[in-house]
Length: 189
Image (cartoon, rainbow, N blue to C red; front, side, top):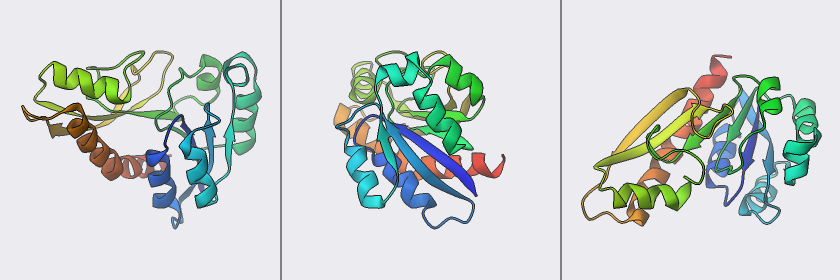
């Protein structure tokens, strides 16, 4: 049985989608969710779905080996960032090489980098009058949103679409594709 650990910072809709997708799987399960936000809604979702969840601070994450030790004891086959906003420390990436992936709400390399997440991305897409956008699932490296691309899915941006309209389209793409891409990666491990 393959083991997935999710990192999330906010509401956790992608985390919940992944948890539910793998709940009845014979191949993989989400064994833990870790968050840098002790007030994140993802903690409520985990409680409801009976999945172990833990919050941590910046020191535990990047200045000590506390989070690394949690990961070592969990022995994940894949670490999935689902709306996780902190840059991943190189020492964790080195220990879990090619086992950390992220989902980004744009077609990288466009609209990536520090500060480009959530509505910041959707607002930029609308302001720049893009005709398409989408999601990118990629490996995580030492730089924001620069890891090798695993998968992209596109959607149209219409002239009258607002940032909220774009956000809704991106959410649909995430819900549809993210669990399947994670499953495909796990099947190839």
